[in-house]
Image (cartoon, rainbow, N blue to C red):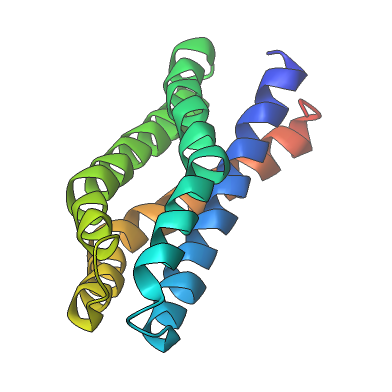
Length: 150
C-alpha cells in the first residue's frame, strides 16, 4: 500500500474531524451571541469560507475512503475501511439533507430556534457517525503504525 495514500487518508479524515468538532461544538453555539442584524452577513461570509475549509476536503476524503475499501487486501482492514466509508456516506447525507437547508434559511435571517435545531440535529444525526469514524480511524492508524505501514 502506498504510504502517501494512507497518510493522505488519515490526514484528511482527522482534519475533517477537527473541523466538524469546531463547527458543531463551538461555532453553532456562539451564533446565539451574534446580534440579529449582523448575523446574515456573518453567516454568508462564513459559508464562503466553508467551501475551501470543509467541502473541498470532504469531496476528496469521501471518494478516498471508498477507494481504500477497494485498495486494501487484508479482509479485517477492508471491513474497517468499509465501515468507515459507510459511516462517512451517512454523515455526508445527513449533512447535505438536514443541515444545509437550515444553513440556507439562516443565511437570510437570524433565528435562534433554527440554530438550536442545527445543534440538536448534529448531536442526533451526525455525532454518532463522527464518533464511529474517529474510533475506526484511530484503530486503523494504530494497526498501520504497529505494522510499520505508515
